[in-house]
Image (cartoon, rainbow, N blue to C red; front, top):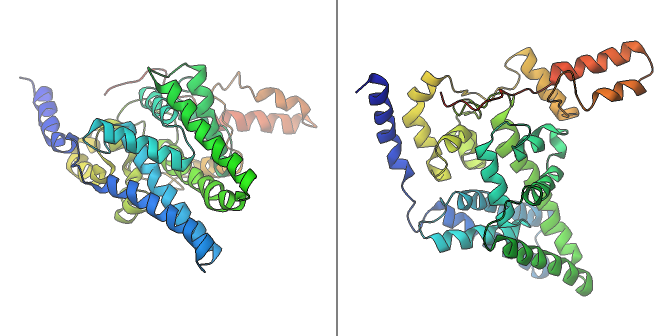
Length: 335
């Protein structure tokens, strides 16, 4: 047996202990139940309590932030070992987030299959088609992508209809019975903040500079014990891409166990912001404008140069498009 084969067998053995389904009672179940408790507490305090509005908004934000990890792990069947309970957690977290579980699941799996592919990775569009601070509204592209690519299977279109029907019914009831203030303050507002958080820590930071399609380099790790809990493991995002069935609370130990392998593969293991001048420039560009071309010579934004007042500004605009263009590797490499 070759050295490479022995090495592969060794690392498969190392990672196997993290690939087994989680216990029936695990941290993701706690997040799911805790999110609903916090959401109910914020609503109850709105009507019965004396807690200030910022505290209630904070509770609602935390509830939705927790459910964001639940829906993600449920997508990969890593939330619960029982298939039906895992599905129920996925749908339950989606309802609280105002999402549709079939849309999130199918679109997210497309992301895993086509990381950093400008034409087929839906999250690539979310991350590279506007400023970072407007990343939340771009998640609506997922719904378009779901229908444009006809991604649903079996009963998932019906499930989408039921969940969207429930969402619309709640809003209509809020208008009819006068509780839209609750919806705005304790649902829509916190959901917008969670959308920014998810967009930054699930999509933008893990995959920048959006160039590699190699499975060892298409996402990154930036180790931190504190961040591991604040963003629930997404600072170990590359570990998730390499082994999607690992639950979020095992990303960190899985990373520590496989770090020599990632070192050997040249996997990015830093946050990659302001480490070089070019890094800093690109980050600031993403914060302020963030619209990136995928073809230097045939950018869809190149025609905008025609409306600029003089040749000097037109050249600067084209130069900016060239400098900030994202042209990932055309093929997905496995080594």
